[in-house]
Image 1 (cartoon, helix red, strand yellow):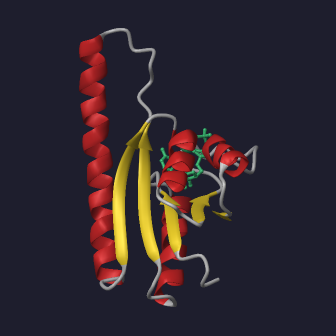
Image 2 (cartoon, rainbow, N blue to C red):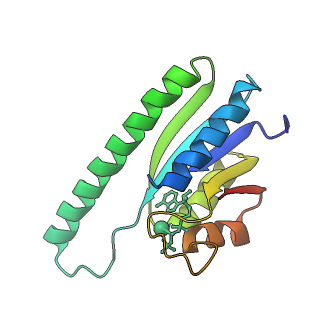
Length: 144
Ligand SMILES: Nc1ncnc2c1ncn2[C@@H]1O[C@H](COP(=O)(O)OP(=O)(O)OP(=O)(O)O)[C@@H](O)[C@H]1O
Ligand SMILES: [Mg+2]
């Protein structure tokens, strides 16, 4: 597993994404050369007609995402003080943005949950994990 040393964790705050992050941390503890990037993608709906409402919703979402990742950043600093870690807020379609980030930042493994915040249990995979599995150019570890 040591060859998977540039990890991307896709994080939406769901229990399974926390589990995915914890898996990445456990792997990193056995490999001091491992780098972990944690990303969360905002996807404000494009259908909001008023630009003012859109801007205020976008601002609110940005603030929430930054807060969410701040907590993660603190956790990573405590758990992995000697590893290279990074958190990032992305904007746009989550599946596309996650794959693009992995490509642009040379990631060799993506770790994510099978389901996320929308927890409908009929399908095993949510739409974001499905999209990433279909389009990614590196292996994907799906946590369930
Ligand atoms: N906005 C996001 N940013 C980063 N990672 C995400 C985001 N949304 C989902 N993920 C990742 O994808 C995993 C699966 O979530 P996904 O959104 O596909 O399922 P869901 O929320 O149950 O269903 P839905 O397709 O309705 O959103 C999550 O555990 C998380 O790792
Ligand atoms: Mg979701």
